[in-house]
Image (cartoon, rainbow, N blue to C red; front, top):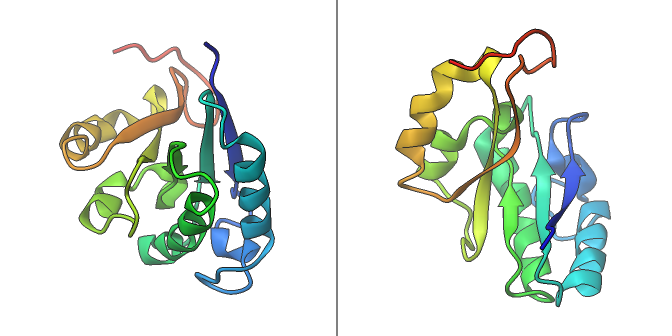
Amino acid sequence: RIYVMIDWHVLSPGDPNAWLDGVGADTGLAIDFWEEMATLYKDKKHVLYEIANEPNGVDWPTVKAYHDAVIPKIRAIDPETIIIVGTPTWSQDIHIAAENPVAAPYNVMYTFHFYAGSHASLVQRVVDTSTKIPLFATEFGVSEASGDNGPFLD
């Protein structure tokens, strides 16, 4: 089986709330999009939803407000599909999210982005956090985060 991840990429602007009608609002373009995706794919076992990929320049409470607005809208239509949520610093601050998880954690995983040439010092963070919340590496590589250099295999 091939899995498909529908990804709402928020690299710029880094605050996913830019796609809501205010911080944590239950209306806005992101809500409309995720309600449509949930309606179209709710019965598809091979589809995953990544509702905010690479938040940056904002703190976890701000990102969490977005997740806490979007997740119930999806769950009202699709109660089972795995939802993957991003964390600040381009989905690297999983340890902060673990201390204050999303309000509706059922079938929710937290994304982590790892590039061996840039993030080797974060391996212990993954080890420590993996016992607290479910993690999913939705981006990884053996280069630097920029895509330059490598391979870094140690």
